[in-house]
Image (cartoon, rainbow, N blue to C red):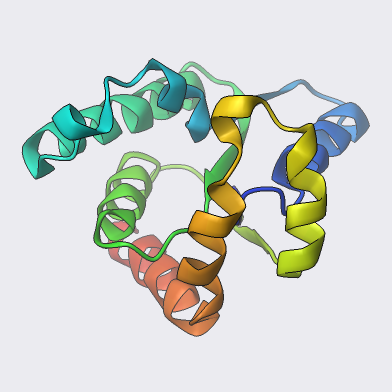
Length: 151
């Protein structure tokens, strides 16, 4: 699982890793589900958001359960919903060996990469950088708690 702020290099590392593997590894970016979501005003309700997140996480788990090796990309966030995303995902992946890689980069570096992204993905560095950089240790402890709670 590759985790970091937008434009930290998750997709680049995923593609490079996949190209270097002897066996095929499928790449799944959980942001794949984002463009297919309804407008924010309708999915910000906790009940609806949990259902959407559970669907995306279940899709990732189903790909792994079918016998595929998977490289998962997940944006680092520190908002209240991030804990649910991680807890749900790790619960679904509890029977698998999960290796966590947290990618960090400077705000300037991430902002420099952002212009190459699709228009609907622009502005995410600004939105997410402050949410994860303020306390990387909090994020790491959330990941660790999620991993060990699920095992």
